[in-house]
Amino acid sequence: MSRIVYVLNGPNLNLLGKRQPHIYGHETLADVEAECRRTAAELRLELEFRQSNAEYQLIDWIHEARERAGGIVINPAAFTHTSVAILDALNACEFPIIEVHISNVHRREPFRHHSYVSLVASGVIAGFGTQGYPLALQRLARLIDDSEK
Ligand code: DHK
View 1 (cartoon, rainbow, N blue to C red):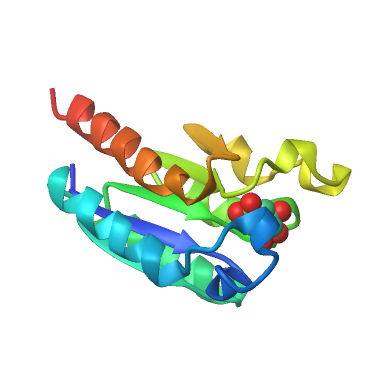
View 2 (view 1 turned 90 degrees about the vertical axis):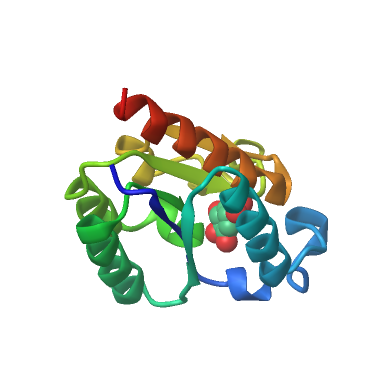
């Protein structure tokens, strides 16, 4: 299986570190990317790290990943709770998908408790802050390694 992994980030995550730091923390998305690059190098994964505020762009990147990647880590942000289109794109992928939320969505507003993406995710990490991203990469590397045995 390919060792290319996509880490995809949805709307408003470009404001990480500035928006509602009591919920999302003080680290920026650039900090998260740097941490993911360190972790990916240790795990011998090749990383594509991206963020978009546009649903169609995330879908196009999922289609791109479908052709060349071994897995996806995705924080769909608000699209988690609304997007059948992102679910459909992920359902077209045959590799493992890990869903990440920085905050613990289950102790927030009821509309954040439902996730379309969870229907396709191998696993979900929520409430671990930005530490959830390297943890998700560790899990993905294990799933890729196991698929090669
Ligand atoms: C990020 C968002 O922007 C919200 O819309 C989600 C998620 C939660 C997070 O915790 O990373 O509800």
